[in-house]
Length: 630
Image 1 (cartoon, one colour):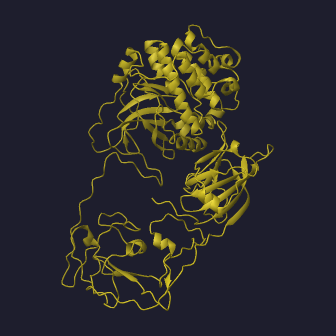
Image 2 (image 1 turned 135 degrees about the vertical axis):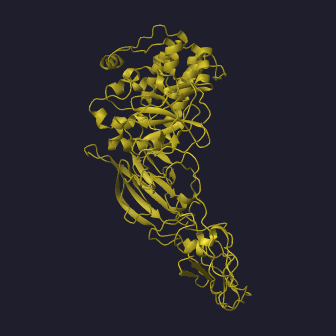
Image 3 (image 1 turned 180 degrees about the vertical axis):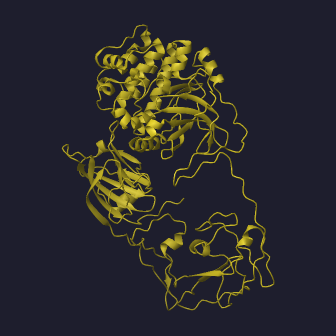
């Protein structure tokens, strides 16, 4: 994202072809435009300014770009660093893909150098150290920036901010770039990018050296001109560092090494910055920027959010994706209250407890029929804190408010509790009568509880456990069960679920497995939320396996994989680099839905195979642990 200064000023007015709203975000000004799209200023409902980047139509029409864009944005949302602008919202499936980041009130490095000239050495050292810290977090999320350049570095009052990380990779896969179109400028590319070789975190270190030279000299290290000429010099010639201060020569020289293996890591870059400044640890003063550059920050401070007026028409929402309203909707007027018809009293021989136990009752089990008084579908599922419903007595209706549209059953006279019979648990019967006002009909849902037995999914109520066909883990009553002679007999011990084995699963790149699937076949559905175990063959970074619905643990060599081992291990992570896997390595997976799996790595696809995949064995124990609660 670039807060660029255009000919019309920093906050440019919207033009005829600019949208007025994106998915509920009002656009108030245009901040700039780049190779992949335009950037607009908007505000959250709470009034915080955000920068929204709308992707160009040329890329939007490419299905592969959308897939990569969605994948990269999901990775970028995991990046939470002090020197990055966090991604807070996005949509890859709408008419125009877009993403929103926190708005940074500061000029880009390219704008600052163009307007005020090169920066002093102390500022450059703090700049490079901050960018290096940002790259540490970005690389830690499995992302290589690929497009680190002065226009993607913003200068804020408390340090630099790196933006647009990882998005260039989405463009690399499109038909546009495959036919020769280059995204961004080649001036700050690394030799391996220019030569079409493998991309790695060292690619960003080379670009960081170029950014440092540009900030200190005021011109690109490999000059300017045609793309072919610049790329040739990057690959075959040495940089022109004339005018580079002595304190920066080792730092810049090592970063600009032609061979990626000779470049320092980002951690070493930070150490080099500290050594060049004469300190063991850099301390960032509030006035780290020259006064002329710092003055630009105040001119870029976004005005308070404008007064909300009725929003303009929004883009058509994506199927399955809720719209993001710019302001709370105005609730419709309540319909007039209709008297609730009297309902015959419930037979007195049926017990009606005043407060149903958790997980039971009509709210938990009876399907809701009809719609609420406002016209929206009635909510289903348990209501943890629901109060007693308004009821109509035989003497006449007394219901008021919205609940009058759904008169409840008449409340029976309180009955004294019946005594328990020896050796048996009294059957608990819960009956809910629902009558429709004006419809003249009623539906009665009666729920029966078996003697002393409650299914696990009923007892849990709101538990997220998925029904995969496997029986849930049996539970035992620790207090025992009363015997026929009045004594208490110990309950049976909890039994572990039986494992289910799946052998030689070939899991392709960008495919995933769901532990609840009976067939355990890889799938790549973008709408599948059950991404329990996935494999990514990253052409730009280290390959990895990951989970979106649980935790992974890579077992130590020699550690015996079992259900008990997976239950007890707590060295949790959400991703594991495949370079850490050797043949026979075992990974414990515990899903949010209570399933436990032991995944055994068997190897990768042979080089002669056109497909990229890994082969694994999976042993899964379904419903083996307590599911994660919402």
